[in-house]
Length: 358
Image (tube, rainbow, N blue to C red):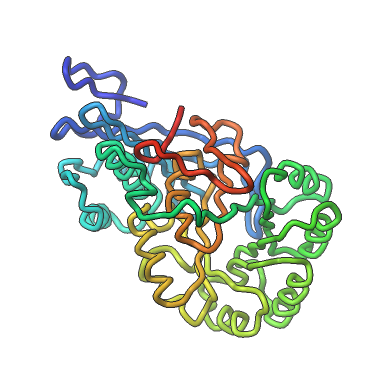
């Protein structure tokens, strides 16, 4: 991570973006390595490009992270190009997060992950300046923390069983579906565990009647929710399935940012909020509030992430119905200490900011 020395004006490294009112914004490209190849309905990968950022101000450091999974269209290059356009002079204190997100959106459309990195770093910095944990500032109640699931990608039965063993600390298993082998995968898991299951088809189902039959079969297997069964653009089919399914149907790829919450009503039973889609913590909380007004269930999820983005989402998790925040469990090179985890749940720290530890 590159830094600008304020007092002696020495620059250590490169990529210094700004120095305004003693605030610096710095960044570092990072490749996150996965424990296993991660396979879903339409692709597979073994790593995820990240951009780790820092906001430094008067001895305080806020940490942020952009996890740029390939299907979202962001990369190290797009993130660096965006950051070079950011003027931290816009970030007056106390931070007006609504105005900050509007400013970031004005710089370029899309790019939600790198916008999330900035938003997360500002929340972490804000908490440290105010000497309060982010979850307290966001109004979360740790007693309402939901259990988090452990995701198992599509794989051979032998590897699936190995992954189930790795999920021992979690009380719920999330299974990626969307191929012809869906039932075999579920049966393999059920041969070794009776833990509740979440499933995510990642838009992989195409036949409506087969999908509905699958919903009833999955209910018999102890599945508690199904994410994005049909193509996100096929609103009619998703709404048809939602009306008939005995299991909650959750919009994922179809729900990116705040305006999408309104469009999810009547199409899904609930929504999956991810900070890398919502452009950060501020808009994620707005989405939570709007979903509750619309009587939509809420799953807070993640991409392949380090402890940084995981702790940011965990700060909001008690405001949601379900959590799928397994990023640190699935990676090999987490640059931060794993968050505290007990009895299947994250334990929120009283430390200022996000509570990130190196």
